[in-house]
Image (tube, rainbow, N blue to C red):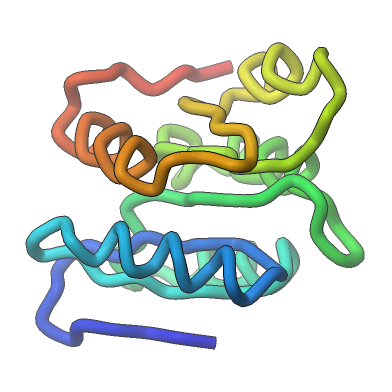
Length: 139
């Protein structure tokens, strides 16, 4: 869908099927110096992007409720990949199930924000993850 800042060395992949949510996240995350944002509306496309080597994807921000493959399955697949097992993953979702945060952490996500969320807090958490202040969970 969108790709910005050709000069950035690091790219965050946003997986969000609601364009308004993706745009809000994109604006917030582009405030991080040297960071580019790439947006895809499906988990399947996100996996295809992640499988390409040399794409500079340094983190994944995903919704849970996506068409054809949900965010839970996406997290599982990323964590089972040898090359991307330590990729920082932030989940943003409007899911109302009280067990969702525990489930996504068990799958290996690094952070969870429920909708409505603060884009500034998501940006801050991403900066911490990228700077290595917060260790990534690993299965």
